[in-house]
Image (cartoon, rainbow, N blue to C red):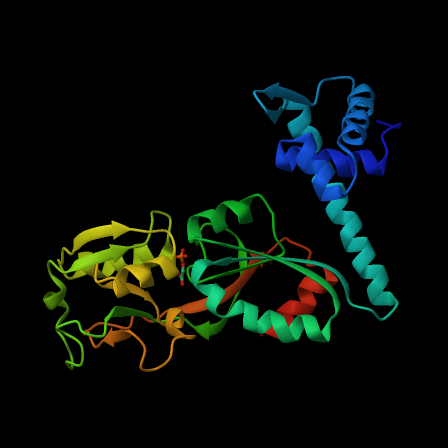
Length: 292
Ligand code: PGA
């Protein structure tokens, strides 16, 4: 490996991530023959094939997978080094990798706007997904910070709450229960319902409360996207339980209403978390302070 260059490792990491020479070349703004030459030289230095090609896609060999882990650690360390040097120079500069649960899309961009204005050298990537995916990302140490409502108990995490994230029953404005007060939860029995996908924290919370009260709703549709669920409610397909924040950008007299069902809202929080043994980068620390 003594002859491998840093550039080859960067090209390898991008190729492995995309499973394609062409897409790696596009991302790095170099030509595809340059990528394949660099990979040939790196393969020679390692002494074993790094990829195998099946159809159009490249798959990592065992040696390739092992190199990728090393490569990601080296590149992350270099990123951290660059951030530390910039910090010594009095500049906040570098990459911030955030991953958040779906409903944070209604909040995090508004926080990131002024943050990025204050720290113009910071380059942010924000991955929005559900709780199950986020847990996998934490285990694989993919991001700097995670924003979610149900921190997994089994991981050793640093956890800080920063805002309420209540779950409410959302219906179309003309729903027969709209405007009624203290609706007993039993009235939801048999209601056409739109549910989030497996792996969603909202789905888990909803299933738990219905189970606790012996309620069975009539599952009309399962969708992995809060905005699409809103469209389904607006289309008259049924009601749903979502974070109150999904209505943040809707006008107060818009097409939705929150039903005043007893035992709702389900009170929850958003937490910002990261593995306890993780050394936060300068930029991640700056964002954490800003957020809190
Ligand atoms: P989910 O989480 O995307 O996993 O359902 C959203 C939330 O807890 O607000």
